[in-house]
Image 1 (cartoon, helix red, strand yellow):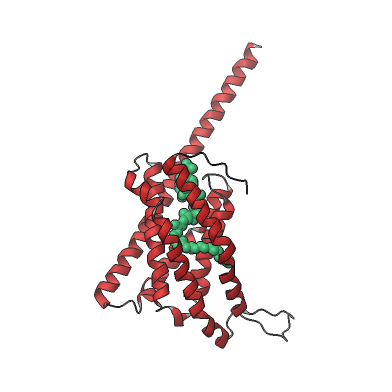
Image 2: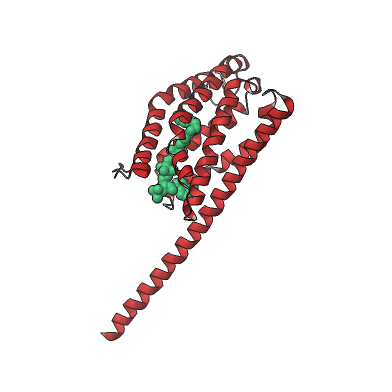
Length: 242
Ligand SMILES: CCCCCCCCCCCCC[C@@H](O)CC(=O)SCCNC(=O)CCNC(=O)[C@H](O)C(C)(C)COP(=O)(O)OP(=O)(O)OC[C@H]1O[C@@H](n2cnc3c(N)ncnc32)[C@H](O)[C@@H]1OP(=O)(O)O
């Protein structure tokens, strides 16, 4: 009897040690990830400012930062993994929609349709994303280090009120500007007849993406408003499961 109790205690201790190691590893990884992402977006902000100060125009700005942007925005896919394995308390769906729509904008719109790279709308969403991500990743970093300045917390849960709609306007205007070029070039499209017997029109795909902002964006925005009430005003929010 005594020995089985002791066994139980040893097992419990082992489990606790495992949990502690796992949580220390998780914290170390998340801290590294958030510092790297804050640094990446800061580099982007500085590159954009340097370009504008030197050239006095936004023309050519996108091309000058394209590689860094593609790298850091694509790397954000890791965040969907964080939610999926449960190391951050966030919905996979909300994070997935946010990250995938950004990756789509970067690779399949801004990067693929060169004719729109100098549009003001592209610069608008770039600036908005940059401010958002510097604030967001530095919030997570300081929080993990238990030294969160109130200003960063306030900025994380207030800036989005204006920046989210501005980012959406920039993204939608950029897709809209791309439509004539996509229609003319027939890029990423497959017309019948072909050996696969499949037809796909990227022009209509872009229109569907634009329309999908109508049901999806409000959900992301209201999710952030709920997070804001929870973090800044201490409201208890019961979220529905994925
Ligand atoms: C393939 C075809 C695609 C078709 C696309 C269709 C279109 C769909 C429409 C989409 C519109 C998107 C437009 C958008 O791109 C425009 C912009 O972004 S404009 C710029 C303004 N944007 C924002 O402000 C973005 C706001 N959004 C976000 O912050 C996130 O993306 C979101 C997933 C929405 C955040 O939600 P989350 O629930 O994560 O909020 P919290 O930050 O409060 O985090 C909750 C808790 O999790 C902890 N956490 C999360 N991540 C981390 C991390 N990396 N490290 C450590 N901890 C983390 C966080 O601390 C919270 O913990 P606690 O609960 O303890 O407070």
